[in-house]
Length: 189
Image (tube, rainbow, N blue to C red; front, top):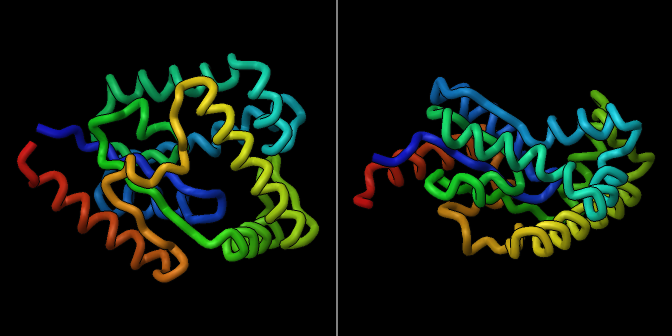
């Protein structure tokens, strides 16, 4: 029997948190966000999300804290939807989803979110600034996880499902994830 855990990864601005929350709500599962945890850690240290990513390249304990939490959740939980860049690696028997999105559209979405509601430890005065910061963040995380674990978080072949969130609205993305998750649960393994 497969564990009832869905891990959702993807690029910043692709809708990981919104999708994960919606999928969890529809399935009656618990939701956890590594991104929210990382933003909280950044805020507690007085860093932006970009600054904590750069710091984590040198201070391995930042990633280890998050990784240990993910491993513990994998052992103890079921009926869980988690948005995280690395959860798919720490939860190999999960249904692994990657949300893809054009970088310009991702920057526009993130900028709009920052302007409307704010975002803990993340700022941007223009779409261009957000796009540049996002690029730096993705490169920092990719480099860090390659060095730490030999895992390329942008390698879409490691996932059970890849969804382009630029071609679907949020409800559509949630429905696609749930549809393929149910199919995956019922496949022989």
